[in-house]
Length: 472
Ligand code: IFM
Image (cartoon, rainbow, N blue to C red; front, side):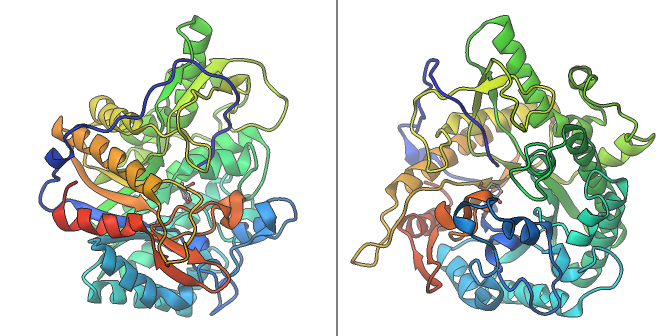
């Protein structure tokens, strides 16, 4: 997830933490987890028959990633997963959300299975279960097999069909032990960062292609959901990254800018997934950009296949105003003129404003406008400039405070009736933060990328108390 905020400041909204934290208790059975993604942690990109993904190609293209970093080694999780599972056990989490590298399982993105790739995930799942940690599998967290991109990628309908086939074979191999499935992680990023602004793989800058990609990602989700269930899966959902979008002022132009960005960010996915239709106003906004010939009869019914849960990833809020287009490639297809405004409130190392109220608003909005349906926070967390001090500790007080305020915000939504079932912290450990490389540390566990030494941060020790107490 990446925003493109610009300067200046409307009235700042303070990040709030409730006075009485001891009242924050979560229901019995509440899921506490940590999350990661394959390309961000695994490394071993050419081992045991794994094929190249679009992220291998992109990261090896000069100028795309800060410092020229790549995921070639990453956290070397492919070899060190037993140690990483021990760290999860220390955190006391009940669940681990991770993604499968499609090119490890189907190097060509179709047909022939790579047995060694499946075996890796099978070992990982078994090892988690041995430690009493439930695997929560995301099928796609952005590492499309390169041969599928060479054939046109997500803007092509065929990719959605290949994705459903892949989902079915994975359920056949792992479905005896994996209960919870997420089809896609953050299709907004795949579509708009990947095909519109091009700051993520595959790095294309083609607005209409991004809109076709968004549709085919959702179609792939719907087809995969049906394929998983036909093979016996019971708990299937999708994860979307949602932001409240506020106008910078009450002017009609700023309010319209907020409506348009909300359409392109949130409702473009929520409406088809949960209502079976694209928002009318969004279609109107986009009518001069593209036609809808790629949307075939029956697609929206497939996309609208009932979900067992919705995963929500939350990091910050957008504040926007009407402005002028820069002419540079933009995530905001058809609304390139909208400017993103900073409010002058504290930020993380990503430059994302810290706004726990936005999590409360996001969860209650989904519940009010699209629910009722079970929700999980499938990602929330923060990057800060952490370092291991001479005494071996990582004093990441800012991350603890960030998580505490967001847990409290989620609890507030829960206490108002939202069916929130769990919370996954992003991330288990520092990892490859996409176009930012290794410079942005989101982990509860610090990783020294020279030595691969792992160090539990203070926030990790604190989280272990939260998971034990099931409250703050
Ligand atoms: O690292 C990413 C993750 O892959 C998807 N959600 C947002 C995280 C932080 O940017």
